[in-house]
Image 1 (cartoon, rainbow, N blue to C red):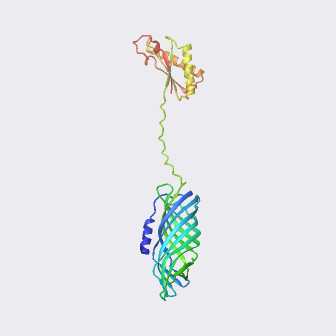
Image 2 (cartoon, rainbow, N blue to C red):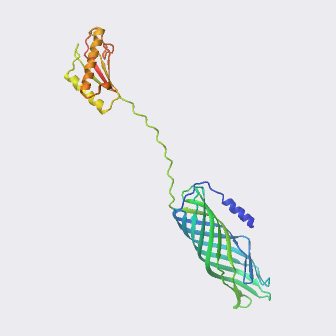
Length: 350
């Protein structure tokens, strides 16, 4: 795979996901994989060339502090093919082999939460790395053959630049990263294979790596956004129910009986408790007299009830008094008939 194709693949995989990013808070885990370029080595008279592209994989567990700062521990693996090893301008040349990097790192990172769907971050890490060279064959100028198959551990360090893209699952994010990873120079034994047990010297390559990774990160304590609040439809006010009280009178009389006063007292108490906005007092008469006389009689009856309501504590300004004479009988009768239910005053609380 060429370097150009590798970078194109990494760019396609790193397309942003349109989701609102959130700060990492609490425990999280992550994993990633991608492409590794091992920088050619030229040290101690030995020049090592590597194939263009190798592979890298890592896994991490960490803790977010909710303010952008994160700390994690990480395990990683890198591998690259050795194309050639040349010593002293070509006197010794190798033709195969592999170089592998294993590392345990402690990283500190900072997320730049800018209110965007993408959260860029930077980080540094230190730890311990093992360099393993396998099956690296070298042919000497005198026809002797050498092989490097050795592992050495050294102090390791790295720099990290990346970005996180929140996915629709709460706490889940896609990450895209560049990492520079290096160690102090390892010291590897070179064995002379043509003479069993004969020493061949020491191989000390530089170990600088450039990695492009795509990964997944899951934060366990990411709060789930509450569902949108739906406003309740306005409640229609309950319709006002009118309360009606009937006060009855003796024939051709407008004075109040004890029962009449009791009913008026109940109406006055109800008017105070329900805070009525209007009190209607309407006088009526039966058809035993002339219409003109009955009109005046119904008016006296209505005035008598209104006066008693005022005496019971109702404001006169709240009372509307009307008189209908014999025009609105409760019980329809012929003219001249004495009907007790028509000799009344209606108190209506609205």
